[in-house]
Length: 155
Image (cartoon, rainbow, N blue to C red; front, side, top):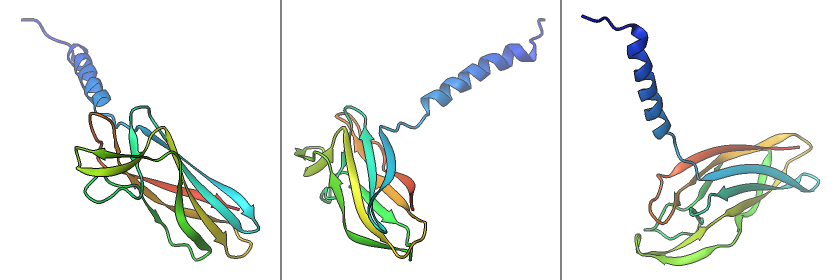
């Protein structure tokens, strides 16, 4: 009877598990970036930019109920900051009737920026922090909603 060494059994198992892990990686067709643009003493525009892989769509904050999950921001309360006006979307919004959901969707391809004007109270350094919940779809599938945390330094 032939004896097997530990390596002759473990090596094929390692490759098997490596292959399973590679297939289980999370797909992220959206890359997020964050920056603060000074607009005057203590005033900033915080820009949250989404770069979307070709073929995928990210949904507007104004996507109606019954459709895909609209992009939504939650800002962490900071007593040193005042938000000025609504969160704006800058990009080429596409509107079309989505048969899968039965509603008119508002979506972005390629890229979109979300801009929030803020004012810092006093001459201090602080951050605007929070998270963005979003959903992406292509012509074949939708990925489950995802949440991305962020923090932008204001100085």
